[in-house]
Amino acid sequence: MLDHKHHLISIVVAAALSATGAVGASADTIYTYTGMPFTSALSPYTTSDYVSGWIDLAAPLSAGRPLTGIVPVSFSFSDGLQTITASNALSGSVIDLATDSSADISYWLIVLYDEPTYTATVLTFNCPSCGLSVAAADQGINSSSQGGSTIDSPGTWTVSTTPLPAALPLFATGLGAMGLLGWRRKRKNAAAIAA
Image (tube, rainbow, N blue to C red; front, side, top):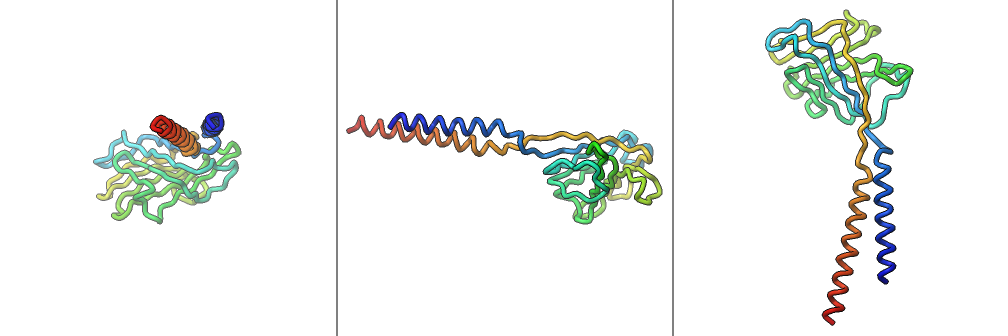
């Protein structure tokens, strides 16, 4: 009987350890934007402020993607003074992304409004074909309609992959099973000694 328990423990441990090696198999993809410093700013904004942020996607963007909307897992963008996230963004906010043949973000249109005040705006775009008066801009506007901006100087995007802890529940289950088997063995031994 003891050999059967040890065999079961080794199976559970092996399964848990092999699963931890597969943690990198599924991952979120984080796209991070860093804009250029504002060239025009009304107090409280300064020319040291700039638009920055990140978008978390469940899977990487495909190569050659046209400029269309995405559904992020989460996001957060700031203009240096205020931050708009997935939890406080107005539903009318826009996040459109396009990629080149290497799957890097080539064009974008991101307009985020806060909720419930609808007074904060963070904007970044690089969209020569959107029919706007300028091809690219970053801008932040606060509740007093003060703001900062930079025109025709788009920032840069970087991409990273964050492993999801998908195997951790299996690993925890394996550890729990080992603990349960140890507890049962101790209880049986204590009962045998008492008898």
